[in-house]
Image (cartoon, rainbow, N blue to C red; front, side, top):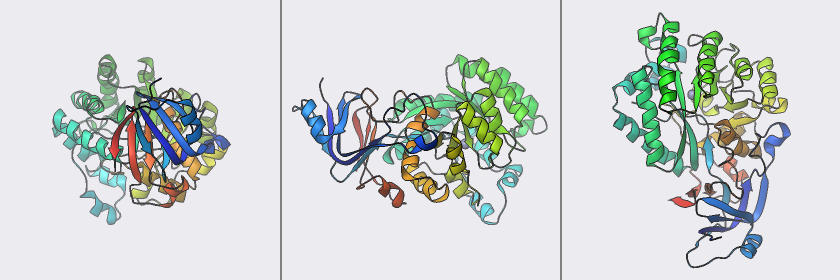
Length: 420
Ligand SMILES: [Zn+2]
């Protein structure tokens, strides 16, 4: 086997070996394999060998064509996986910050035509090329911060034409740069103003017009719905998700963010891969998600940015056996951040998750949450060679420092794509 790339002498190679089949939960959420003075050998696009530097050097042949990286003083993690983003959108919403500082609640900003609806206007007005250019720029930022795979939702179009345009833009962004994007159709993200008095009429369009076209054009792997008071009820969400499931899409939900409507219970009932947000999840919801194996994708950056004092009950969820993943929720309104390193800090400080739990939540469990656990999320022989090297003496350091990008090198499919 020809070794094309060798990373050696790393202070730590940190990975969750053996977790590709099932997400980590309960006490398993913190299970890490940490190899001191570690090495990773890469053959083409895949990982050939992971072990201590001595072991790996003993087993492989290095020749002139092998690129060798000395990772002394660095920590090597699997390339980070961001399992909940709205990375393709038009416009930006910095003007809403002033309203927020005056204490205007999000649902009121939405009722005034701001919030999601102003991003909808901007996304409808944007050309596909403009959406693609914005998406590429954001993905480059993500890559530079260690993210090598991400989920990407539509949901700022809210017409068949604009939703298809967004999903086609996501596909083009995926092809144009190294970050792999897993597309999710989120036509039921908000009720567009044309259907303000008739949300069920809008859902008819989502179900009868958008979904079949999205599936026929093969533009999405998952379908998501924003189940929330004033947006879509549990019954309405069920309608959309069942239609999507019948067409072969996997299911995701924005659930129990502001009001505990029972979205997490619905996610468990329908066998969704994940339920996301979960700030006000009920005990029953936690129990049902644990029993059904639904991954709880927590988005603490959004809670932080909305200045809320109540975070998702991550400890309770982990203790009850819900596998937890973390994401940025990168979007133009409630979370204009695409850096998972900041999520590491917020999750430790405000969700009270430990660094090993957090690392699994942004690598292997995040990969499970988007159906990519066989390919990415851990450093194991045969998996895709996606790696993030941090200028840090150990993995605790990633949770300790904040606000500085600690990335030194990012490798995607065996190629160095970022070098600081
Ligand atoms: Zn979201």
